Image 1 (cartoon, helix red, strand yellow):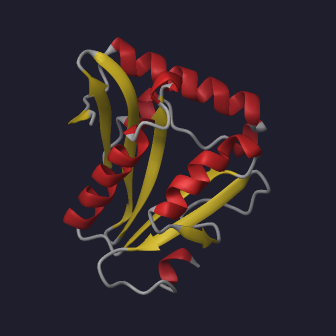
Image 2 (cartoon, one colour; image 1 turned 135 degrees about the vertical axis):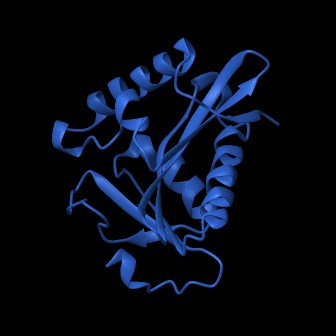
Image 3 (spheres, rainbow, N blue to C red; image 1 turned 135 degrees about the horizontal axis):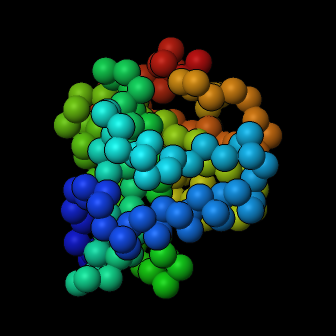
Amino acid sequence: MPRIVRDPLTGPEIAALLREHLEQMRRISPPESVHALDLARLRAPGIAFWSAWDGDRLLGCAALRELDPVHGEVKSMRTVPAARRRGVAAALLDTVVAEARRRGYRRLSLETGSQPEFAPARALYARFGFTPCGPFGDYRPDPCSTFMTRALDGAHECDEATR
């Protein structure tokens, strides 16, 4: 099991992973459909960021952004290629969901790609109870985006926050 830590976003390993993440998103999606955050935007208030490690080897990362006092967004989920399908993303997502519950969020949503390259991510989110929804927050309909959401701790699946 990876060691997951709250990350201050200052290390060269995390900077390189996030740079690689943004570069891949820009190769797969048109510019208007790239919603990944860069290092500076991940340091904004209201965003918590975690990294997963095996010793001194970075395995992946994830973030939680507050949309409003009862609604959070999963951001910047990324696993290094050598660690994929080893439970790293699931451990990170567990951490994000636990923090969302601790904050009292009633809903957790996310945006991911609709292209075939994102099929493993969509499958992971579905296993965690996320279901398709419409755009939320500042997002707009986009054929390259899949929006997903899940209620937390007794909130109703048809919560108005995702409409």
